[in-house]
Length: 129
Image (tube, rainbow, N blue to C red; front, top):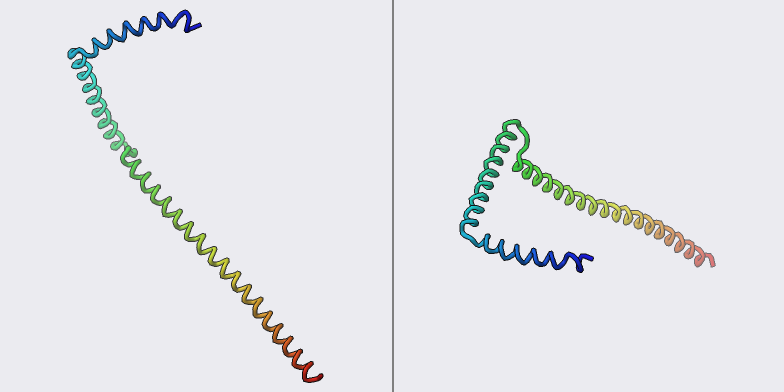
């Protein structure tokens, strides 16, 4: 429905206003006025930012810079904490491996004792028989 009824009027309006606005914005007087307005707004923003900074500083609240610095240190500490967790995991793995090796060593010792006992029995049988 849009295509049939409204599209021709929409195209006519956009073509006419487009050419008009193009001429207006290419005019040096318009561009000078817009540049002046933008400069004023940027100066106003800088002034309000400075005023906010002074108010926050006077109240003892953290400023944007303080928050960024704090966030940097928090991220740094999180990184160090992750590194320590990885090192702890490695140490725990080593501990588990060490405990496993100790258990295996005990089993090997028991098997050696059993083997020696079997060899002694076999020697006794050979001596008796």
